[in-house]
Structure formats: structure tokens, C-alpha cells
Length: 320
Image (cartoon, rainbow, N blue to C red; front, top):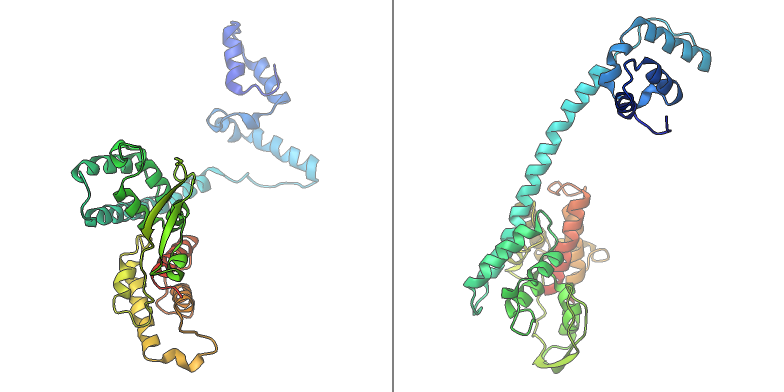
């Protein structure tokens, strides 16, 4: 018998060679390889015999010089209990995952629905839904829009992404968009009102490359808005595509947080709390997870990652 052969292979060997009595072959296999590799149903009857228990005790005595008394413990019952305990959390987790996926997909649909003057917009819905189906349960915006870009309806006759696709990428993937088109929100703010020749880099973005070319247009104009005084800040936060869970709780935290800054509450500790946009946004995001906040959301790796994405989203509009 070869080393590594399992119990079924030994039985098959005996049957193929017309052995009517397997006892010697199985005894040799068990002595050289060990019955620990046999499935439990095959040897479960043996383990309940008194002779098996006596042999087991004798082995323990030889190995550890310890005398075992009484019956061997029954190990089958704890295994059954463990299986029952594991079933419930898996069901709850799957349901939450489906809810998150539904909200994630709906955020993309809603944004696309709001886009105006999209040529042949009706023809784009079907491939959008096909992309959702092909994407499965993944919730990665970059990967999804790379997938969507593969549908011919979402590309021009020259193979370039259509304007609607660019608008969605700019909204949901601002960092990747800035890399693709050669500018960042911070750079725009520093150079507002200045007509520029925007240089589009040859960048491998979402799996396709284009040659270098110049685009004559002005940079989008941005205004310096304070997150402390902006009346629409809560609404801006509410539609954040990264805010997929605890939406109501986080928006409520922000409303109270903004009121405290407006009332001058944090003026008492000016050495700790600055009132510029970057520091206020950073303070708010930490407050959402802080143990000192009685209304904070649970601190988990997923929630921490979501708050980090919300911070990036807020800084697009509220930056210094």
C-alpha cells in the first residue's frame, strides 16, 4: 500500500483484486497509516466498545504515565451543539449584506435618474441593470464602473466613455476621476476663475488607455463654503453614496454637531478645536465613532471604513 492511500482506496483495491476477506488488509493499513484518517461513521461503532476504551487508556498510560479511570467522555454531543449555535449569525449577516447591496445599487440608479440631457437615456437602463447582475454582490464603485464601461451603449462611437459615465464616476469615484482627467478638487479650488488648458493624461483608468490630448475649458468653479454655516450641509451628507448604513443616525449626529459649532460651544476650547473646514470635518468623523458620544455608531472595521469615505466626500465640497 502506498503512503497517503485512504480507507476507500484500500477497499477499492481489495474489490478490484477479488479479495473476499478485507480484515488483514485493513488491519495492516490501520497499523501503518492510522485509523484517524477514516471517516467517523465507519469506526463509530468501534469507539463505543469496551475493548477500544481499554486500548485507548493503555496508550495514554504508556505515553504520559497517567492512569485513566471511568468511562471515556462522549464527544458527539458538543459537536451537535456547536452546529446549532453557528446557524443564526450567518442568516442575519446575509440579510444585512443584501440590504446594503440594495441601498448601494439604488444610490447609483438615483444619481443616473437625476442626470439631465443624456442622449438615448432609455437605451442605457438595460445595460446598467446587466452590469448590476454581472457585478454580483460586490460594492466597489471603481470595479463597477469599469464593468459598466465595457458595455457598448455606455461608450461613444470612438470607444470613449459617454458624458453620463464620466459624471457618475466624478460623483462616486472622485479620486480616480481626478487621476484620469488630471486635476483634483484641491487644485481646482486654488485655481478657480482661471481659464486653463486642461491636459488629459494617458492613464490606464478602468482598463482602457487613451492618447494624450489637450482639452480647452475652464476648471469648474468652486466657492469657499463653511460647513459650520451651510444650511444645506445636512442634505449634502444625506445623499452621500458611501453612507449605506446608519444614515439617519449619522445625519442626526451631524445636525447636533453643527448646532454646537454655530452656537459657539467649541469656542471655549479654541486651542483644541479649529473652525476651518478640514478640521471640522475631521472632528465630526471622529465624533461619529467616539466612545464619548452617547449616540455614536458601533466602532467596527466596516463602519470605520465608511466614515473614512464620508470624510473624503465632505472634503470635496468643504475644503480649505
